[in-house]
Image (cartoon, rainbow, N blue to C red; front, top):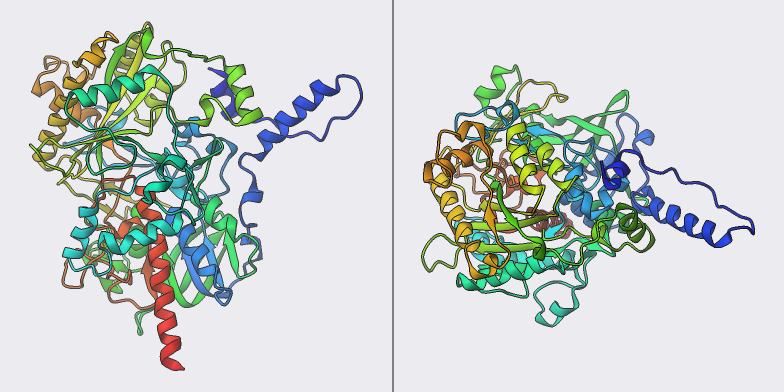
Length: 623
């Protein structure tokens, strides 16, 4: 194990100050390194945990369930009005020091900071993973998935938002939501300031990393050879380096950014390790009154005078609604749950679908000036927040392409990871987070022994397949059934195959030939009967090791009441139940082409404004 891997499991305790004359400079250095290490994952960046102070029957104006990317945004906005008494409940705890270090983002999956969801077994997908399941990471921690994701920030194509409007979601066209993106954004990439594409007055730092290695230029030059344009900013189609939520080498998760700004407000209470078991609903009035929540060894009831706001994410939000009697009558009845409102909660699950291990061997010239001395890199990071630990390498270099001739609507996203020769960390993380079989991992590791390895992640952006989230039991402590329906529509396999063919052309360009690029035959046991590179091989590979693109949406779909699949209206109010809203990515009708964190914050900003507008209107009406 490298020193990087060792650090994750053996964090250094923080000593008191060292004094004395002898060796003063050396000891000062050691103290500085320890102090810098202790700044990571500091609870001082967040509100104090108020869980122990909560008592049965406490009353608030708003109760928000989930302190993730959207929930943290909503809570901070509502609490900024001092007249609002806000309670934010989070099932997880405080972020770890590891979560603050950008290079360790992969290592957070399948840990205590992750809900560790997985898909149900299917005949269509995830066939080549251990136990035939894809792993579905989701943040169980303050900041939610913004604490464990890859810190990319892209908004996605305008036409997707405009399509929401065409479905009847008034106020959700791109021109309507653009100001709410900007409310969060604080652009710090100076070369983009004059373009005025992003906000500059928000709280969320947006920076941009550029990997200064030859492989970066090779990818961009090869894109140009194929006729794609390279841009200096996010674009509808083409290649660019995305913004990231990293500041001075440290992750900026939504809880740190938004809750941290208001952490001293007396009207904002945040409770961690607080699992909401159900929403308390008045069956006669059909309106939400509060929540039943488990905090430590106590289960108490807390009440909301104005609204209960569910921001638990695309898996846990529908789970909680169904546990509370809001969902498909037949499904709830089968578990002995009384149905308060019969509605298609949990349906319409959509995700980006990714083939993550298209592997290419490249020669030594792909990565020059390479220093991988763990001790040196740890020193660079803890002393100055610099070096490879302060970045995610090639992670923010993105290509948006279309398999349709002359189309400006992308349907494939290309992402890249460069793995240095004889790597001892990144590939092991890939094996763990993708649940790879031993033979598949070994073929990648063997290719990496004598060559740098470029992994291309090929993601389907507009999958036609859809799935659902269902309850496994009526216990709030059991994980729900996640059936994403991956590749249930054959067209999704065909489009992803076309995306793979684009990448094959890319590595055959003059730019890649200079690096002696050679495609790796990844050993997928279920696909051994097919000849490598044939359509049959790739279709088999897609069904065996294709997996989540980390962007689950739609399980509490926003739409008009006449839409049989909609759960909330364009004001994000749950159809048929008063004083209850859902404000997170589960309301998104169809996936954007961007990274989901940006959309999650936008939904949080707009949702909070809709809530405040509603109560301001009531106040105005009364007086």
